Image 1 (tube, rainbow, N blue to C red):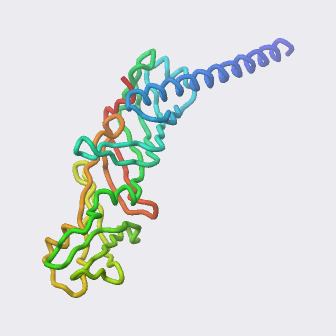
Image 2 (cartoon, rainbow, N blue to C red):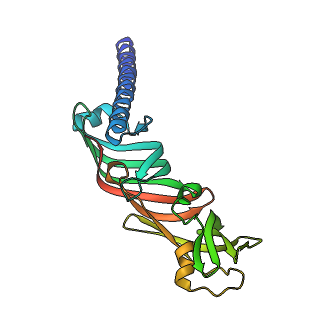
Length: 245
């Protein structure tokens, strides 16, 4: 019995040491991966990297990690014209089946899914915020975007008719969709500007707009979009996503 107790004690001690070693190793790997990702994506701040699954060391031996979660607080994505940038807030991605090199210099995920938000004030930069003529004597411009409820964006437009600004801005509910990496906002109906008849194409030149978003981390792409209280919520997905290298 005494020998059995000693054996059990040794097993418990060794098990505890293994857990400690495993957690030290995973913390080191998370730091290395975060630094590599920061360099690869030219980020201003170090991202959050969390390696899931236990034990970590047995995954390392196999050369593949089951699940890695990546968080980037603010990501400056290309806006499609090569010069402009659009801020993506709170980008969270779940990377599956991550294969990596021994020194963590390269890592690629078999698949990835995630979420992020484009704030309304950021998307507003895309809309025509400067007064534009929509008819003789009538100018209009978008002055605000907000949550319209039920997955719609409320687009607020200010208009001036014959030199007089309308006392109240007009608003219209719009649908938001994504196609080939481009976020599109299209009015469900057309606002009226002081009773003046204006061609639909001229009105939509103000109310409708789109924003191309390129260069998300690792080659992930926009999948779905929906209006929400704090901005447009987006989901992203990708395959063979490069985390580093």
